[in-house]
Every structure is written in structure tokens, then in C-alpha cells.
Length: 385
Ligand code: PLP
Image (tube, rainbow, N blue to C red; front, side):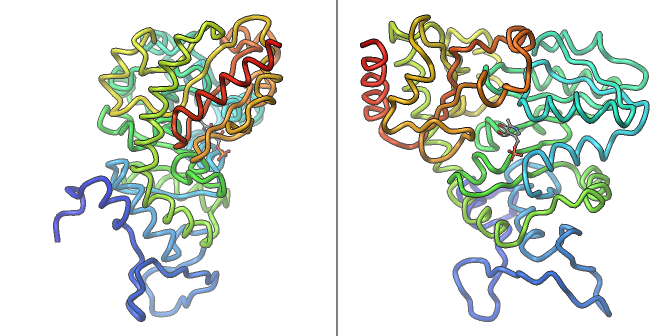
């Protein structure tokens, strides 16, 4: 058998971290639903909240292999993964630097919870690497980035951030949800802790809530010590579904990425659209950087409808593309960030982050692009009537 780290991406998706069915030789992993395991004369004390049931343990191997890390942990949601990662490294008096435009839920975690625990934080003024260094203080413990970022698809220079952090003995964390490990492998650029909302591409079918962290053994052990206290473990039934989903991760994400490029190019030429945010377009200010650090540009894009075309009405007229809070499923979906994911920000905060009322975030699925284009054309026609 080949060294696991040298397997092809599809082989890794399908085979790494399978739970072998030794008894019946079934083709797929059996599910171990037990919450109670023998504790005498065994090396490992298994318990779901210890993140070490057979299904959990094996799935982490697949995620670690995909992210090129030594180890991983899986959680009940992306936010469980993000909060556990943060609280594992932080204590009273510590300071965190956070990229300005990040997922609204992460922003909310920071601004509503950190003060209670005496944790200081600074947001950068942009996603440019030069904006991070001046914010470093004696007590800075973490630099937290998200690239591509939600919802404006900004690209942060992972290599530059990794280097700044290493020089200053600071841990780096990234939310890698939008790219997925198929389009971006942050440890290869010097980032320490990789976090996912596995509710998105890793799950991919809009039917499970999950999160994941991938990192070195040393970092995962430290995160685990906090994880068992916070208790955001994933049920084994869902672990099994996540394993099944990951088998097609490469196939799905590659096809969605291919489709997104077509849609971005179409939207950019559409006279009813003011601006398209997609790192795969030459007009994207960080196109060259995205090319350097991404294997593919991803399947998320955002666009602004021309003034006078009502964003909510436009979405209601769409027939195939569904308005939806979430993203990254096989089906194409849209959302208005100002009304949903970033609704907790006030108007001034939204303006500062470039989130216009007419902005639409588009998660491109696997449907044929001609069908998606026809759907957009007919919806625009109806709004303009
Ligand atoms: N990170 C990103 C980029 C997201 O888009 C989301 C959810 O939309 C999360 C994290 C949070 O994930 P979850 O909803 O699984 O907690």
C-alpha cells in the first residue's frame, strides 16, 4: 500500500480514514453509535465528548490528510470549531488581531464574548498583509484570517501573514470554508490552524451541521483540552454522513468551481450588474495573489445589481437558484448579506465593510451554467417590468 500522504486527492477523499468493517466486509464504514465504551484494560477511554469514538477518530484522519496536517478534530458546527480554537489559546489579558471582513457569526463571537473574558482584539483596516503588523502588541496571541472572505471574496496573503506571525511568535488561524481543502491548503503557506464550517463544502448537500479544525498534533492536543470542556462534539450519525459527503468533495468542488468561473464571466458582462467580486476574474484586485495561493478560485462569488433593480424582488423571481441563508450545497443559492449574514452589524459597520444593500452572494452549484444563466435572465426581466 502506498504511503497515505502520496495518494491522489480522489483516493484520499474516498479511502483515507475509513472504518473497516472487519466482521461483514461491507463497502462503507459501519457507524458506532455507542456513547458508552468499556474502560477497564483498554488504552483509550472512548466517549463522544472526548472526540474519540471510532467514527470520529477515523474521519479526522481524512480531514487531516486533505489539509496536509498531522491531526484534526470535528465539531457540531463551524462556530463550535471557531470558538473552541480561539478559547483554547486565549486567556484574560491576551490580544487577537482579526481581519476586517470575516463571517458575521465570527465577528459577533468576538465583539459579544471577548470583553466578558478580558480578551482584547483589534480589527485590521483591510485584508492587506501590511495592515496586520502595526497592530501587533506584546500580548498578541492569535492572528485570525479568512480568505477568500465572506461575502466580498477578498484575498489575504497567507504566506506574508504566516511569516509576520512566526517572527512574532503568534499563532495563525484561518477560516478555510470558502475555498475548501480542494482549492486551498493553508499549512503549505505557513498557517497553523485551519478551520472549517463543514456545514458548507465538506458536507456539501445542505443537510448537516458540522465543523472541523486541522493542525499539528501539538496544537490539536491543546485544542482538545478545551474542546472536552466546551462539549461541541458531533454525533456519530452525522460523522458518518460527513464521511460520505467527503468522498465526493473533490468532484463536487471542482465542478462548482468550473461553473462559478463561467457565471462570474457572464455576470461581469451583464449590463444589469454593477460589480462582480470573484478572485478568478482578472478585474479582481488580488487576482495575481489568488493565482499564487489557490489551486482553484472557488465557487463563491458576489455581485451588485445596478441601482433600481431590487435585490429581494430579483431573488424572489429566481426559479432554480434558491434564496438561502447557507451556501456551498450542490444546488445554487443566493443571499443578501445586508439582510441576513451581516444583519447584526449596524448600517455604518456594513458600509465600512463594503456591504451594499444590493449586494448578492451567489453560491454556485453543479447545475448546467446555461440553466443558471437563463434563470438570472428571466428574473432580471421580471424585476425590470
Ligand atoms: N465560516 C464561514 C465562512 C461561514 O460562512 C459560516 C456559516 O455560514 C461559518 C463559519 C459558521 O459555520 P456554522 O454555521 O456551521 O456554525
